[in-house]
Amino acid sequence: MLVSLAQAGAGDWTAAGTSRGVTLEFRDDSRLEVREVRATTELPFPAASIFSLVCDFTHYGSLLSDVRETKMLVGTAPTDYEIYLRYAPRFLVVSARDVVVHVQGQSLPDGSGRCQWTDLKQREPERKGIVRMAFLRGSWTIEPLDATRARVVYQIAVNPGGRLPGWLVRRGAVSALPDVIEQV
Image (cartoon, rainbow, N blue to C red):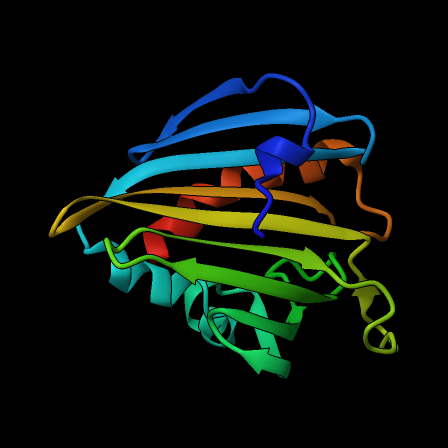
């Protein structure tokens, strides 16, 4: 059963504005010591085609410019699988990061769908020179509005590990979401 971040998370959401038609919100989860961010928008595409794109992380290199490597470990995308992801930020002062996530997706006949992911600790050995993400959890929810439009909600909570200042992580988490949705 898929459990939403809202069911597992902290209190109320705080509005963080709108950027390029994407409504942004955040909340801090003191239990997990992370900021969850949520982006909501409408896209001019059928819901089923969005689900197949955003829930298949094997193609995230084309969706997120910082993803440099994806390696399927086990399972079948986009419904239930484990995948290794390595990120190499465009800023050279920030070390590369990696994570293994378990992704679960469910697409319904009406075109709606949901996928969620969570990091798997100790699934793969750490690599020299790459910082292992301390925490990564997220989801995509896709709802058809009609045959050619869908509402998408992208929610993520991340602790990238290493020695990044908290203010930079919090700011980056909110500001990156419109870029991700724009690529969809």
